[in-house]
Amino acid sequence: MTAMKPEVRPARPYFSSGPCAKPPGWSPEHLATGSLGRSHRSKIGKARLQYCIDLMRDVLRLPATHRIGIVPGSDTGAFEMAMWTMLGARPVTALAWESFGEGWVTDAVKQLKIDPTVIRADYGRLPDLGQVDWSNDVLFTWNGTTSGVRVPDGDWIAGDREGLSFADATSAVFAYDLPWDRIDVATFSWQKVLGGEGAHGVLILGPRAVERLESHTPAWPLPKVFRLMSKGALAEGVFKGETINTPSMLAVEDAIWALEWAKDIGGLPALIARCEANAAALDAIVESRAWLGHLAADPAIRSKTSVCLTVAGADEPFIKKMAASLEAEDAAYDIAGYRDAPPGLRIWCGATVDAADIEALGPWLDWAYAQAKAS
Image 1 (tube, rainbow, N blue to C red):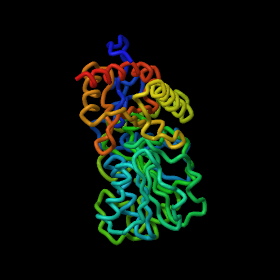
Image 2 (image 1 turned 135 degrees about the horizontal axis):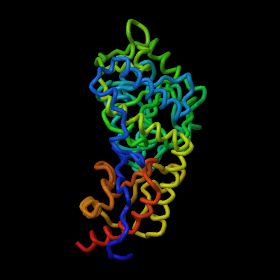
Image 3 (image 1 turned 90 degrees about the vertical axis):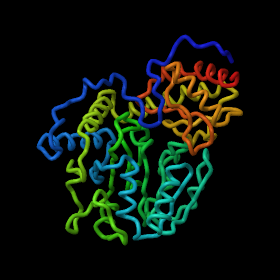
Image 4 (image 1 turned 60 degrees about the horizontal axis):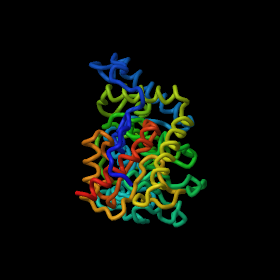
């Protein structure tokens, strides 16, 4: 390993795991602005919101059976909206192997007080999915952003399940070909694989989730921003661009641009291919360095977007030194692991990152590691 400062920097050193890198070619001048300064309830406002929904359906290849709504509060708001409006009809199982999954456990236990069955695993591991009782409603993260661990597929979700599957899919949507017939509720935010802006979440409901909303009245109060029912019926307008609260039309236009970019490069297959190429480039870096490792040791459950790395002998101050050195050199931004995770690095490999920039990052990691050891 050399301590020499590399000569070639990543062209776009944006490796944050959220908000993530903008798509290649993005510029604010590219965004449509006709909806700005207008009411989101105006003809143009509702049309642009509906167009955004239509683009998401197209790129995700979502079946007509599933509804898409733009909701407040990013992915957290979307997932909590689903929990607050649909839980309570059946027992609940919550899976947790990273910080956001633990957040849903906290919501279920301390806020909703529904005494769920909790199945946990340490960071870097996946719990035994065979333990899940599908007569329960099941809460899980498809891709654990803070641990770099994902479920391998949807085969473990029972096709004849009695409960609902609730998938926090924020680092998975647009990166994997998700089995929508196994997902009753999915949530995500634009700020991950699309590189969009924060604040807004997306809620996807399958027909069984809609049935639950129409047949179940929660035992707890619902804030206005969570209310998906109106006069005893589903508020269908939410899924046609009539948002519950005032959206940022600038954030919507930004998402539209990213979705149009996704279509232009070939849609979901192209996005998946870019993620896989980026993850492969990072794998090559890890495999050639004895001091680097994957927090998720099993490739079958390793994320292809939020890749979490171990650094031999490193504690939190060491990681902070590495990350600060790289940021000062404009070589890599925001790559320290999540605050609740074991000390390490986290490199975003989503579709908006270029594989060439991942490749260029390798020598800079060597340099930062040497700098931190020498200090």
